[in-house]
Length: 497
Image (cartoon, rainbow, N blue to C red; front, side):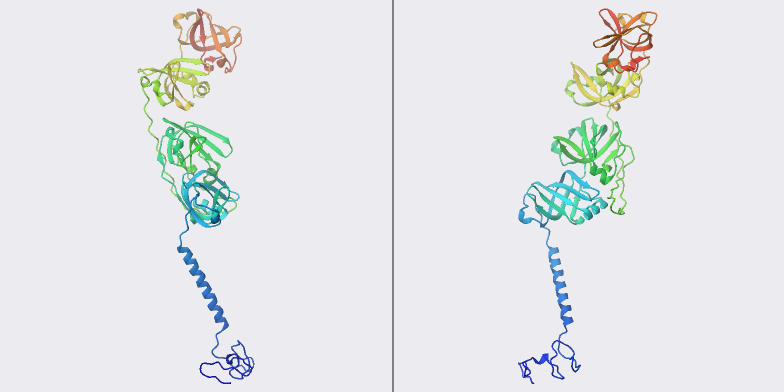
């Protein structure tokens, strides 16, 4: 065997020289040490080195590919641009959260919709991602501007996107603007607002939804708190009708009517009360993470109460407006569904109309009578040319000074000159007589008699109906019918056995 310059020498069998042992000349193949004579072969590349180099090159290639992919921005698409060929693509979408959210604390599933101006995109997230968002307090709410990146899914009926990484959700919650409750319209949908007013009603049409009616002097608006808000941020504060509250939330529209939807129970604050700390609730199947302490929101400042309007300044042009008036009750009359109190403040007179259920809810109904000084908030109305102020709840009526006791009179002293006067008498009843609109019964105090007229609306509310021989005190308005004097109790409170 020999070599020449530029050629590879082979043995007689045709094998390359490098495949033969340099010492004994036998075939050793890829071995680094001859298995026959033990001589170490020179000039060979170890197989292990080849393997290591291959792994290193593959790793570097993957890292380079990952780095290159990281340098490319995630493409942004709109609902209108999404097509079937983009199915399963990783894209970014932007828009405003609209409508109701879906949240299941057991499975830790979250879904909401965004509107990007070209259409709606359905966003969903699952367990680990949702748990991280809840723990961080980063769950989107209606009105939020969001940027979401995830896996796009194109279906026949909708475009949806799955959020795979919590960090790929960015939320911008707009600063609320102060508005009056009655000025909100359907055109304000999506706007984040702050309203302050009085709780007028608390209603739950079904389990999981609480509707709170809040009114100020411009009108009223409904605050809708669904179970997603309470599941994520805790229970509502103990609200009561008549309380002043401040509510921050996004305007949504339900059946063409605007309503305010808070993102958290902390957005519903009782004016003058302690602020409500927001404590996100983590689904029970996971250990609750330790959240960083966040500062509590500031306590709302009460809106200054407007001064009462002069009664003489009210006019029919203000029908439907919410006003605050003050005056002395100069006449109190009953009617089929309540009472009418004529107020006088020196500048004019206006009727305060109280429905019977509202009148009965007053702290001291008998004190709301002739001579009482009262403050009433209500809506301006007109009935048969008569201006009225109609309160909605008992909290709208404030008794500044109670009415003095009605004067006692002897029945024998009553004359036609007393018609329109409110008095009280005491006597014994004769057998009552029923007629189409109620009952009439004669009362005798030893000095004379007078006919007491109990209209059906008063009669039905009496704790004890009239009976012959009953001794009682009766208050009411003196009237006359066909030359016969009558005493007409105005409310059930005028009948005192």
